[in-house]
Image 1 (cartoon, rainbow, N blue to C red):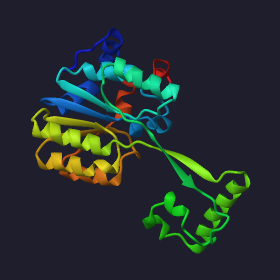
Image 2 (image 1 turned 90 degrees about the horizontal axis):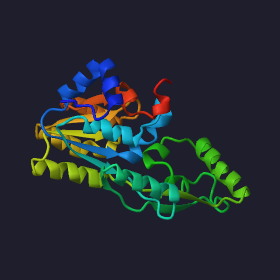
Image 3 (image 1 turned 90 degrees about the vertical axis):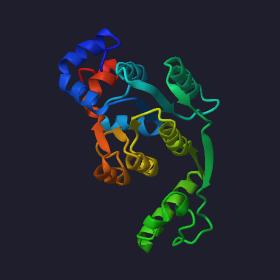
Image 4 (image 1 turned 180 degrees about the vertical axis):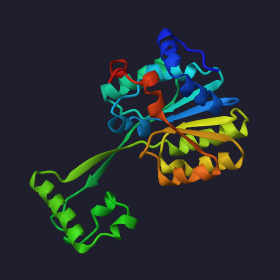
Length: 247
């Protein structure tokens, strides 16, 4: 049952009755929510609006059968913006799991490699895709590395902090402990295929909150087993930045 936590949610719900009804029909029994924020945060570029974490928390808390809202996001140690965000997430009382973001240094020094070599490209492109490239494409990409070298750039630093293992494990643990009848996953990452598939095999309801073109083909394929994909665009007014309400 949806019980708005504040007056604004109540006003919006009055005009979004069908959306609330649909969500209520999906969220049956005990519900656990799992938010893969590293996957969710970039959606803003595709959606054209941003998810407000405080408004999202109030919205989810308004459904009285949601037991836990699990939130996963890395901390970039020493970065004030990152550390401030993590503190805000804690203050909002999400069930936060965080860990340090790893900084990976990838070499792009192309001065001594053969222009037809894939040695550097393997750090950035999967082998299955590299195998499809012709020689001209490989030479073109290596030339781009050399162009960067001329600018004095010989390494690229990449940030890595995946939570697919932790989220998958927590979902299965909640299953084994009988803590949830319905699992809500905010992500579109293919890494969740196996745990989601197992939940569906065990006759649990799984709802994917995402939007078009951010859901992997692997997860899309699970619709045939019962996975329901709910488009977050339907709840924009409930969870977007307040200044974006009328945009």
